[in-house]
Length: 141
Image (tube, rainbow, N blue to C red):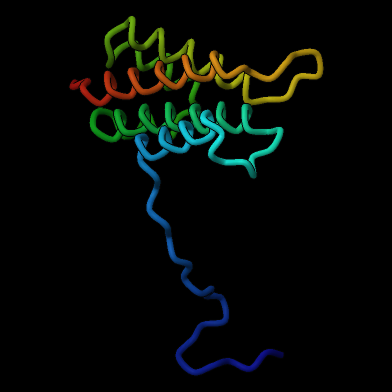
């Protein structure tokens, strides 16, 4: 049997430090570095990693909207959140958000019969992500 240390419950684990969540802007800076080749350690997976980071930034923008308007929606699956987005945000913004999320989700996963996304496509998605993030940030209920 394990000896108990004074003042410490055996079921408690040490508290781990929680790092602050990167902002959408910080994520976009990382994407820029991947796109300009400043991260050589990314190797052959840089394009899919870029798509993943863009998708995370887009999801974070949606999360931040829900935090301001409808906090309970943040617990729903992203597909449901994208459907609900049509009620809160401008419908064209909601449609563009859903289309971009779908494209990024597809691009982020490996498909044996498809090429990874190219630089020009990733740059366009990066600009779309930044524009949508700004539009969602400006959305008020």
